[in-house]
Length: 182
Image (tube, rainbow, N blue to C red; front, side):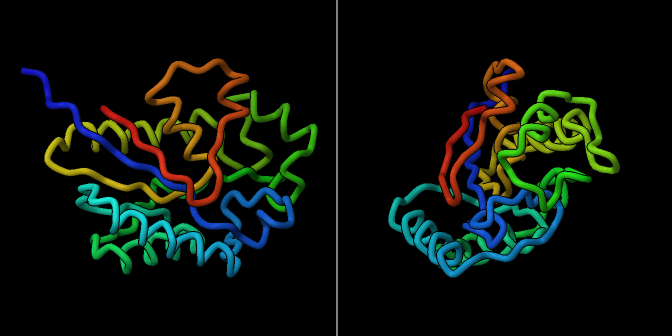
């Protein structure tokens, strides 16, 4: 018997200092700006007013996502817990460098590249796909995932066919809210 279709929601953390400075954050813990904290509170208020059923918030251990998740939980009353697999990809030597650097843009299409000490796209996809497989099997709960732009790309690729170029170019804005159906 097939499992019932259900949803999972995703948001990216609020704006960070390094987002403003156009730097690659990765595993480096860049804090939220005041605008980022406001974005998180506003998203929480919108979710509370929406009436959407969300049973639990799962968030990345990096402070920018954890602080965003806590603001949403405070506004909505939804329980939240850290999910280590939602941490951003480790971009190794690219962390702290310009997000729009030509070398980084090209390297994002090399899925086995570990960026000199980082984590490959293949490794990232394995941990996120494993998590999504678990959430897919848990048909009794609806989750909100609070994570990062790199995680957003992988989540999107789990639900939709994408070319390598589409994957490398994919992403969402800070505190954008996306719905996926299993």
